[in-house]
Length: 395
Image (cartoon, rainbow, N blue to C red; front, side, top):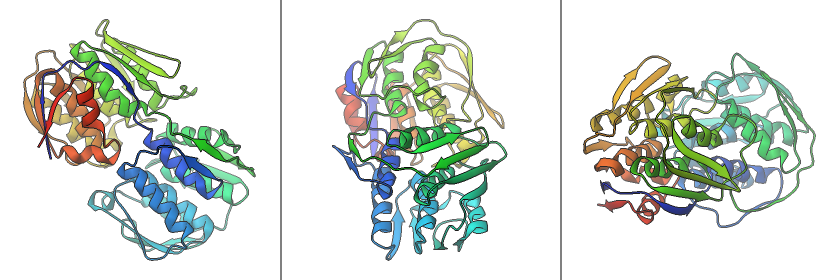
């Protein structure tokens, strides 16, 4: 599918798309307690989480075929290990390319794997409640181990080296604490106590980063946008921090009473951000940086190359609009411009790349190939952009 976009002013009010990260974590929590989610938005990643839980509850019969959710994949394996489930997991081509090396350390604790890439056969049972794992590749398996230890009555996770994407472990702990889990997260250690979890009934709160692409488009086209239905920002750096990041870049950006308000550009500011603890924020920062007359540095970017696609290459697609980009091992420097030119670009099947590329497109026009990539996290993305004034046609 191709999205053809003409210059537009993005403005109005929308309810934030549901948080994919929180939805997955709540769905997986249904192995711990009763979870009932209202009006759940069925993105591909959410469907993967539902399939994974049903696979476990159904006794792991046949093959669990995931679409593309690396979060579900890496979290579900330790959970299956706590149950002693035996099964086969496969996935679509992008997921097959994602490394599982860090998970193989669970062989030291009773879980066996046939491979370090999909498809894999999983068997054995997690036998220890004090576990040491590497934290330099991903944090998703660490989040999965928190669920495992809750199932096993508590325990301790020790992290070797620096824990990357720590904000997502904090998010897991924060969410599970809200339903009764007793979890303490330290620099290189997580303590999980035996806990009695409460049922959860309600909706999934809004997603800051999925919302951020509408916010970026609005700010750079001179619109005013209110995004409602967002959760109260917790006290750690994470996806929710994008509100303050946009403000630091010179955008009029503020949070109040569950709403994020963006109202144009106040003053463009050269700035630098380290995204290692919340790597997905890089794409949202790049989206805004593309249309600012300033220099924006994004540090801690090496793991962008092993996401759904090589997201460094995805950011380089912005150069087709006239954005100047320098890439180094751990840093990307972006010099945007208000004098961009219409271009044809490719999201390489990556939802965040596709949404990022919509931002310069609403400024000066553009054609985005493989536009269906947004279905991974926000199937309504293009419809919502149109509702906000975007001149978007899908072919």
